Image 1: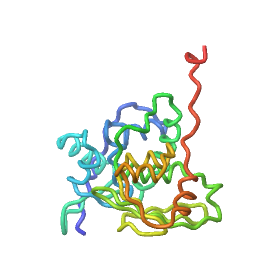
Image 2: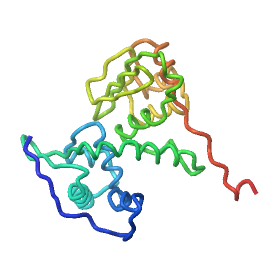
Image 3: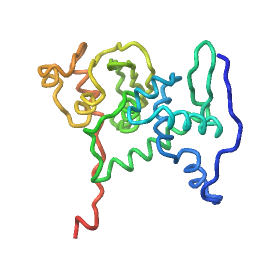
Length: 227
């Protein structure tokens, strides 16, 4: 692919040598980190990014893509068709996104029932996996969403996820929101099937073992609420 990389320096907001300040300058603009999240599983076209971020305008998305390219977080490929891809350094932001997600999920204001993208759903699995309980388990789980599909391969306590046709020991065909309810709210698969919200194929015991590896963290105690 022919790539175009913009090398102009990113804007400075804080005039602070702290790496956290620079991190906010790189990813702190509204939507910037979510654009990076949507690119965590490989290149995406502009229209695909907008589909994963329905609240963003075309103008703002263009601005964020240009800014992230200037910062060296992503590159634009112009051939054979225009798309955007994280740089190797950009992919390293996954750990930061995961840490922020785990921390924020402890907020009493976190609502897991809100809309989320397919990429967000899959990244949450890599974030919330109980790696200690996953040791010794080997499972391949497929996920088919309305506009995307993925395969997660659990092995040796790790969970690599790739964008690929859904296949494996168990395959879920549903929306990201329903999948989140099954994984985190422990909505029974059979109930979701009966409601027409999910189609399942494969080994149900394997699916149950996989689901049991994911739990949202305990909520933080608010001093105001405690008082």
